[in-house]
Image (cartoon, rainbow, N blue to C red):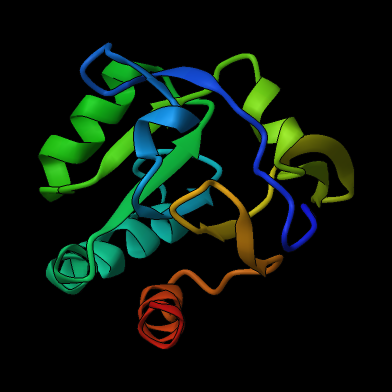
Length: 154
C-alpha cells in the first residue's frame, strides 16, 4: 500500500464522460480514491450503492469520491446511469494507476491464479497526500467507515 504522508501518484485518466482527470484536478479537496474490480458485479455494485446512499454527507464535508476500475468510460456511464451513482468513475484500462496505487495483485478463483484489482481505498488530503489506507474493504460497510474517518479527519 502507499505510505501515509506521501504524495499520491499522479494520473491522467478518462472519466465516464470521456473527460480527462488528473490528481491535480482534486487539489484543495479531501478525496476518496477507491479501486474496485468490475462495473455492475454484485460486490462492486454494493460498494458503489452504499457510497451513493451517504454521498450527500461526503458532499457536505467537501469530499470528492473517485472510483477506479479497468472498465471503459462507456461501461462506467452505463453503471452510473443504472444505479444513479453521483461520483466520478475513472477508466484505467492499462492498469497504470491501479498498479501505481498498489491495487493490482494476484488473485485466485477455482484454483486458477490471475492478476486483478484488489478492493483498496485511500483518503487523500487537500494537498494530495495519503492520510488513510484501507487495504481490505468490505463492500457493504466501507462507505460508513470512510464517512466516520473523514468526519474525524476534517
